[in-house]
Length: 215
Ligand code: 5GP
Image (cartoon, rainbow, N blue to C red; front, side, top):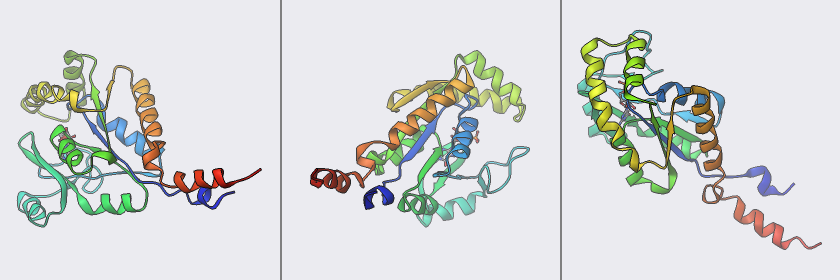
């Protein structure tokens, strides 16, 4: 086999997934990461309190406002934003380490964060927006989750309209009516994007070898 085929150096991509709360983005994201050893999840820092069942360092790094602002001052975030009266940000260091190693990184972030990362590295991002099949279904899912108080759910629903209005800035849109179908669509998007010519630097010397190979 050619040396290039065994090395296969490639450029890692950043998969940015956004949606209103309750559209299924978190469980789709976690499943994609679980199924792909070469894909890391970016664990955000947030100033909001943990929900029942959430663990520090697994769902989020739960920090107070002073610690968050210190991270901003240190330029430790790739992006950060105010969402639902709290601050959320993507720590820079683990993302850079993963990309340098040729790994991919998935971000479960809002449209403001997706916009910031896109501005910094437009050719390395793939943006996917997840839509609910209806607003009534979104409300039903938020209530079924039973993790938040009613006033928090109402605020999240209110914000959903603003979030959905951002759909036009994404590369792909998936309507999550059937969870398994939505997951299959997401996995296909990821697989195809990994194959893009520009992300596979090893192809240039490989093709040169093909052309140099005289029969
Ligand atoms: P939740 O509080 O429901 O976990 O998340 C609320 C919203 O914040 C979701 O839309 C989620 O995608 C977004 N979010 C989570 N982490 C980050 C982050 O690091 N940066 C940005 N910009 N948004 C985030």
